[in-house]
Length: 247
Ligand code: DGL
Figure 1 (cartoon, rainbow, N blue to C red):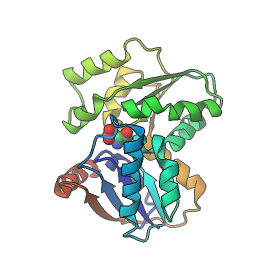
Figure 2: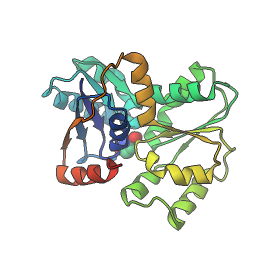
Figure 3: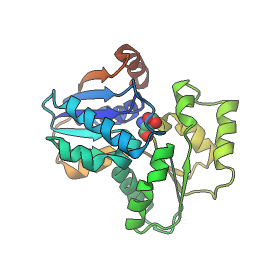
């Protein structure tokens, strides 16, 4: 299978990492809209317009499917992308909610959803989780984590203060949905802040779990061909890819 992975910028590389670990695909075409990132502070119509442009870009390749790694786009533009694409389009929101539900099972458990302003305002995760029976939901926009990750701040005082700033008022969650491409890079800091028992749901692992149910993968690709495209400064994106995707 040859697939496209779309993100607003570099963050979707965290999803590519999961895809590579599971050796599911022969070729991945990555497109990051680095010229217009961040999407997480934009409005619905803009996000949809940009997402449809990404679908147009992917039409240059004969793809078997498109994965929307960006939570913000998955929350707002999946239907519109599906309407204009000539292959199936999968997003990370439904996959993340299902992964949380499968792992927790007990619908009384408390789930915290974190993401960009746009993702949290959309309430897309809450809608899906409520439809699965979960009622104890908390949601918090934690946009400052995005620039922190881009500055490679994965620990230390600034991050600790930001964690406290966002979470000190919240009830201790049983699970946290990392509803933004950047947040898996803060896995250790988040796990330490909450507790060892708190389940952290990553978009990348969630979409793999989802696709493995959807498709009958019979082949393990030892090597996946990777092609990176960006709307601005593709060299910078490739540099980040070589850091994030190394084992
Ligand atoms: N990729 C975005 C997401 O997962 C985060 C960065 C942005 O705001 O564009 O929501």
